[in-house]
Length: 285
Image (cartoon, rainbow, N blue to C red):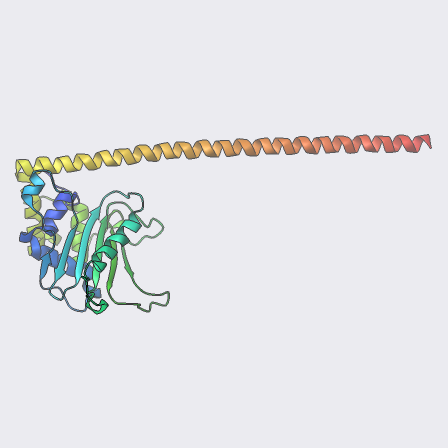
């Protein structure tokens, strides 16, 4: 390719899984991620907000998630988020709830609700205390009993994902998103030698070869770099504030300790004086 392309950049991601010409890729991706949770494989999807190249090239692309409905009416939302913005978990849940509740029109009954699945690929770790890269959240109690089998939220933490041997299609997709910007379309590794992965690489190549598309890709990449720089700056400021607070608290502790030591010395002095007076009284008697 003329230029390396990162499939995690949102505009590329939307073209990969949200373009009408790549509907087969979306079907394959959804089946790969949700295979063990679907009652039946996905065979057809309608993309509800398809990628529009003209809008993208005119820099009007603002909705970068992919929403789709399959042949049974099940709903899907796929989104990538490279930076952990504030309140991201609440945003993720709200997005699922909005898509799920939006199925009903006036007069519809709850029996018409279909399972809804939200899949989020995350560039930074959201659940830092766990080593697992894939998390499935479904509507169950602590004993694992289902309240309603209507989908859920899948989090794929790409920063945690590291595997050498691809054993499943889920492995293949996650490895592609992690290593995609380092792949050479003319010398693909064995794990990329599938029809779907070659089609995915053709989408990356289109961004690499078309000058306008590549410049728009660079603009999105630069924007994300700026956001990352702002995040790093704010984190540094927060660290300074926390350090100053800790130093102030330590100084306050030292002041309290000095005050306590002074009080103890005063008490000991008063006790010594009292003892002297007691001994003087004994001598006088």
